[in-house]
Image 1 (cartoon, rainbow over the protein chains, first blue to last red):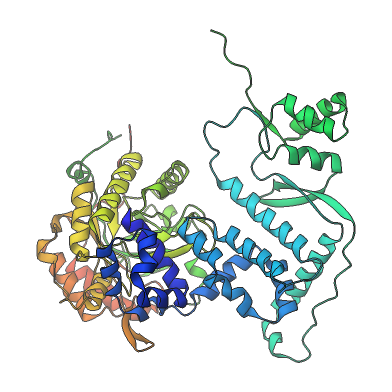
Image 2 (cartoon, each protein chain N blue to C red):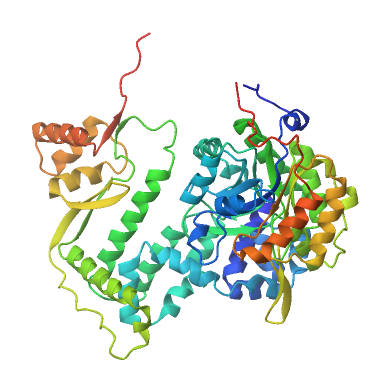
Length: 284
Length: 305
């Protein structure tokens, strides 16, 4: 619908003055590919371009909201780069614009952007990607808990909403705790940011060998606990729904006997780490 | 129990007259300046007759709202999280949660700014308030969304004209909402302050378009203060909810109040101001829209059999 397409454009304009400039300078080439009809392009251009930028705090407020789920990875990025501009630049990046244009999740797009900062060489700390994966997975779990399951869901074994397993370095939790403690110190006296004798960003423990962490909902949030590599592998095989037969085959390829794989599957069901949709059909 | 209703006229027969009320938003009490509706009502029972509760399904009711509910006095429910202009935003979990909230408030009706409250899904960082695109396709989609919402909740749904520094589209705002309310067969919440902003931004007289608007659809009006501001040389009116409504806002209110024969409620959006600054306006509003002897103190909203 033309008004839907135009609304998405307007949202992008509210966040990005560069996009506003592009629209007012080259309206047809910018807006026609976005399926905005000519008569609405005319209407849009009647608006004083300054009207789109009166809320000068919009990007900061939204960044504050997004950072809430990526506290440690963004803190590490800021500690390394010393530039809030690098995070603010998200709102002029194609990842932000694509997210709005496709009605996607801003949190997901922000996670991609933070990954992009590493890919581009802006943030290189050894803990950065694992911290980002940890925080992005928690964010994903939270969203799964509020989403309606697709109907009808495929038959077979499924991961429940909010359950995932990730391989991260074994010191990622101590690193996260150190950063959170540092942020807590600053929160006691925010004006510390002005002081030359402010607390320094702490040295983090070294990256260690891989460990496996289960993410699952508990007490209104998403909690992490260490799990064996066997459980981790089993849960990752079920990221897409599987029949028992296919699960056994996949675990056999990983070196697990059929008997052990069956026991594992039943244990995961018992624990609520998997659930099954009916496989049997009603007899006529 | 009242059977499910399907027409605006039917719903109107069960609609209470609430008088003048005050608004509140979730955790408004955490702001430095906030009028407690229960205490204000206790101090001035002749001036405040209902509470308009502004919240969303993610946050529910706060302690202040619950205290008002315990008084048994009337409420209306002002949603902050549904894109009436975007039918795909109307999902079953939201509807169910909204019904629960409205029921817990014993809300006489649902209302809220009609445009977009968020872009994409209801997620952190996505919330903002946008007016609708003032074009026919938008009006049709909004009408369809409202009609569905009324059917599912069996409550009257009043779209409200939102504030903005920029409105895009060929239609006058009142022409747009006239199409919406006629097509959806619903009532309307005219925000006089927001309309004054629109008229000023488009270079209209405050009353332009009202003579052609179906005033009998207006069930509720809002009145609030606004202030002229400037940004990069661009002058606009900010919807500040300061104590003093602009002259244009009063002009619109007086015009509508004299002609909207189905008007049931007036909300003065002023809760983040000092009490002594807002009492005179409450007094004026009660003179212009007095509480009548036949108004029910605790109306029972209609619900599905």
